[in-house]
Image 1 (cartoon, helix red, strand yellow):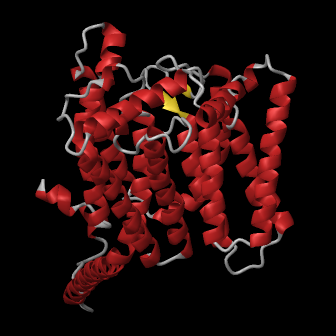
Image 2 (cartoon, helix red, strand yellow):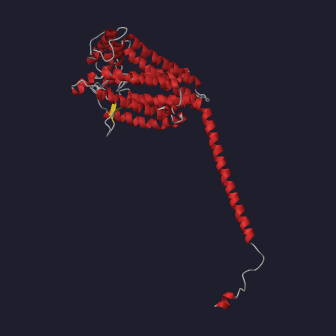
Image 3 (cartoon, rainbow, N blue to C red):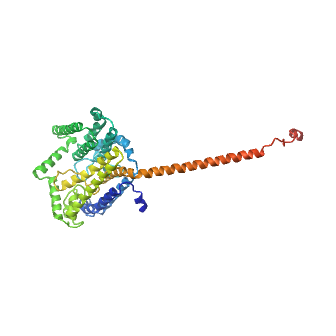
Length: 437
């Protein structure tokens, strides 16, 4: 174990916060999964869900370890190669998407032979953030042409968001807003940013108008859901989402300051998606205001650590990677908490590293692995240079030793040849062979 910990490179504080969030997640997931257990097999036994979550977390940490070993500048090229693959996955999801746990949005695909559901939009978000960071880092010394950036940067982004929008408006909006933030940090011209934001709103309006014109199309089936959620949020109109919010608020109010105790939640039996979208309400009910603020504080500490990591990064690409991958993670957590207390409409965003769900955990771990990779670069530069120097010195010693052995062998062969050489003819009568015959 000690050797494994020593092999963990990068910012140890980020490692610690990630481990704390992952460890804390087991109790609320174990408790909140009872609703799914009753629906799934009618027994209420949540051990299988706990073991499943354990497997997801374990695989997630393997992903972090593997990703943080790959030099982060390799992801420049990977993002460009992965973008067409993302489009294929998103297109397949639109056609063959699977409905999970009764949700009416086809956002997932089923991985063949494994039986694991995968939400392609989360993977697309990571690829887009790295792709945007790559473009901004490449153009840092050049004057950005809006015409060229439309083709090189914004066309791939809008194509990707166009695939995500029909089934998942909240994720598309989150990705778009985070890309706007990333381009602002990367010093993309403000006048162009304003034009892109206007174009984004125009594209959304066009999509809604098309949905109204073709209401029976499968492509626009989610628009009515978005509309009802916004209306319920504004007018207290009763509905399915209003029922979830009411149960979440009851759970939060029941928790008080100290909570009902781990595993003693009552609303977990009535609250849909209690182990994923509304897990924060269950945390507050069981752990109280102290537990809820503790989770919020832990995410804020992780956010400040991301800021420090971005400031210390050696390259602009590294800085933009930390901002582009780290800030959306914290923003997503804030959205999840805000939905639970009815500060925002229901969005379906999970609580990173705490909510159950394989693909969301694994995509978060990929982002964390890349961020940790950036943080390890500075602290390992000296060590890498030292290791390289030692390797070169050892190689030079082997070469010198080999050359010395070859020289000694040549000298010995030369000396032996000189000892055997003589001008005296010792061969005898050259006709002996004929005479003897």
